[in-house]
Length: 606
Ligand code: F6R
Image (cartoon, rainbow, N blue to C red):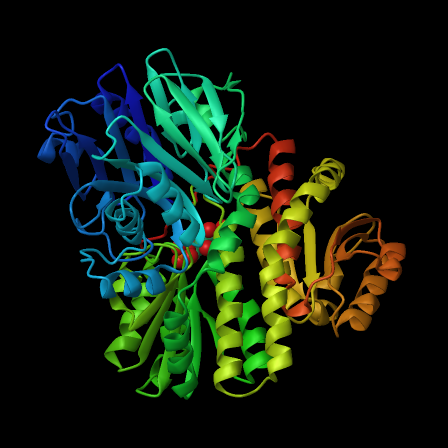
């Protein structure tokens, strides 16, 4: 997602910020901006859409030289990538400049209130409420710190914020909740940044800010306070021994592992969708006669999982179709009564866009779910939702998959509500289960990784794997197989377990590993039957099952237990060990999981 950086000190800040922004580039961005305070105590804002070098060539970010500066590279979430939406954002009087990474959940309410109070907004971003809230405090005579702390107490959601003001031009105030933010100290000055690599060439003395904390940075000191009660906290700087390359991966050896571990955060962000877009898309889906869920690769498996949710929750039949097959298979049936929900992390997949274009020409309603605001899919969709996972750098989709499933689950629930298919109690219970998902994933990552590593070691040399699941777990089997196949190059099959007797069972002989995905749902009894069939033919059984499921444990050679969840949401936590398994098998085989051969992150050719 976006990257922020700030510096205040003895040195010229501009060069430090420009170089820091370049080191934040790897996170992905569409626009760049800086804020500084000149000798006349005026805020100077320079920002535009484009690469850092392009924006620098156009606007000369090195002038005017100053000892205080904020920088931002933006990955659009609220509002298209335009100059107006680029950060920094300002208050009405150009006294306060803010850069932000994250999602402010309650910005619409705050914006309405501020507009009523006479504030003028120029962007469509959630961030812009922050400078106006600080302005409110300054207008009431508060200090920069008091005005800022009051503003931060009013916002809900995820944020790493850095703020400067002409009222007190010798300070940067920054704050953190759920979006990463670190401070740095050196003999020359004080820094804040979204991650360590941005400041590592200048200092390796780093302080990690925790959720609910803010820091007041001055040229030669910093103070950390708790936002809720303003209590001052003491924290020692840590010396970082990483290289810049290691630091970009936040100490993880690969982006894929970093992104697997980012899932509690990306899932929390996927729960912060704007209700009005969910409502709109659910309304369009409700009106459709034929509903196709269009996607490729991993996104297709998210669609398969969601087709069970749409059917079970909203009693709506939807058809998950692989994009490249859509026109041949269903093209002639598309008309004005057709609704296409296209799901694409990049929003640029050729096959998906081609099928969308075809359907658009036949007057179908196009809806989108994507991770990239401003992508082609967002431009051709009647309505779209941004899943807010942040840039995914590993070629294998991990955090974008679980976020897609979570977005689709929210959509299915919304549709169930619109169609009056669930009671209020059922809706409340499902909402609570949705909200618990990031925690469950956190628990799986914290407690199961070592077990998965050991299983990967044990089975890494196997020549073939079979993945089986029933019902909604068919999607998990397919996605688990794709992960293993694409990064460890191990030939693998995945089937709905009910199909295994119709062919795949013929490959089973002594020692062939079969991975069963068996949450405790209505398919459990039948999947136990499938496990016994495979076991009887000599297969090694690896089961991903509910914690405490003794019967499945007794039938399995290895188990990975997952805490109890609503079975309809099981595709999210149950895929985590399979992502880790693929990763660790690739490592055991000496392969680079970030660069699987022959694969591209975004497939933009037929
Ligand atoms: C697998 C993977 C690909 C993509 C597919 C679709 O790990 O990443 O299979 O899922 O190329 O990409 P998007 O979602 O960008 O349309």
